[in-house]
Image 1: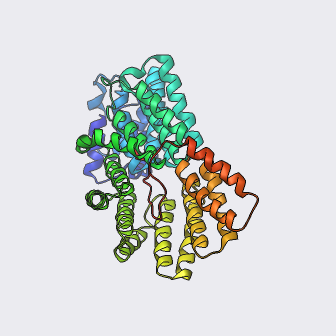
Image 2: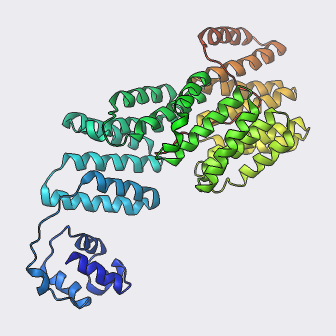
Image 3: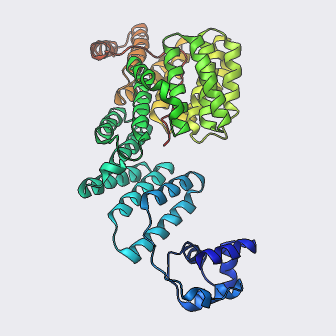
Amino acid sequence: MAQAIKEARIARKMHQDDVSIETGISSSHLYNIEKGYFRVDRDKVQKVCDLFKLHLENFLSEEVAPIELDISQYIKLIEWELTQNPSKAMEHLRQIESQQVHLFGKNTNLEMYATHIRAKHAKMNEQYDLAIKYYNAVIKIATESGKSLHHNLVSSSYYGISQVLHRQNRLLQAIQAIHRGIDAFRTEGERVYTYMLLRINQASILEKMDRDNEALNLIEKYWDDRSYLEFSDARLNLYQIRSEILIKQERFQEAVEIAKIGFDLARLEKNVDRTFEFLSSIGYAFARLGNLQVAKVYFEEANRLQSKIRRKVLASTTYIQLAKIYLQQGQFEDAKQHLEIALTLSKSDDYYHAKTLTAMGEAHYHQKKMESALQYLDSARRIATRLNLDNMVRYTLTLLLDISHHLKMSIHEEYLELFRSIFIKSTTQGGIGMFGFVNDPPDD
């Protein structure tokens, strides 16, 4: 009967909302009727049958049994719908929860999967505390029920937590979440891609912390498997991280080639955020090569996508790079305007804000405006210290030492002690140069 009603509606070129208006039955209820989930009273069924000139008696002899769904498969459909139409996906989730609980009672698997969907939805809406709360709830349910081994939901939830912590620049905690996700991963289970996503996010965080050798080792280990990644954004992130590390290692031509391949893939897949990042990286490489005019073209092309990218904070870096080009060309007013735009764009993210403050401090330093340079650089140093970004701390302290010595300030001794401490602590390679772009964590 459910199939006959659906086919009749489609043949009449009607939507469920149209049927709802004609019959007075809610569209959500009609959705469930067509799926065969709910038994409804005869009057409602008769209304729908009358509308489509179907004979109810022909179906009354059918043996009808409630359908207990394959939860994992249905959830995968909702996860896909979440990327296309989030509100509709959440509506369908509520419907299936209501139907299954009504017919079969509480279902731990359903509760676990549904909570995982809610965590992803909260993360998409940048409700980060709520997302972590839901992910931790999934871990608790799965661990207590013992049903996580096959479905890898514990590992997947730790991946989600690591993404959130990465976005919040809580980098050491993000690394810890990744290790827990790796420990929880089961190779024989579902969501086998989760392991690769964890490793890519780990490389992304290590690169952000300037632990470039560790990041490159991870990237090269999984590089040959990149074409098999189920998530295109994760595959693109591999290209992005590799190009950034190659630039830091001054292998600029290799970096440009990798970034250009990534750009073509991102463009074909209509991934605007990654397209923006690859354009910025290519510009970054040309800037380091000293070809400022070509670099400027790529940075300006990237900024044309600013209105279309999801994370507007990414654009702060290209404004910084353009400002530095203007400074080298003696166009100080243009440089100032671009840095002020970058300051505004970066306020929502401490990492990008620290980079912008550093760039602003550099600009004032090179123009011999020592007092204002000190203020910007010290603010950047404080943020970088809190985020455990040792290279940025070391770089800002280098300038602060020179400024405080030049101004004969008593704080010079304090900066000297801080520099000594960070130098002893640091075991990483790489550094903050005049140009730099940082990749965004991969989406799942």
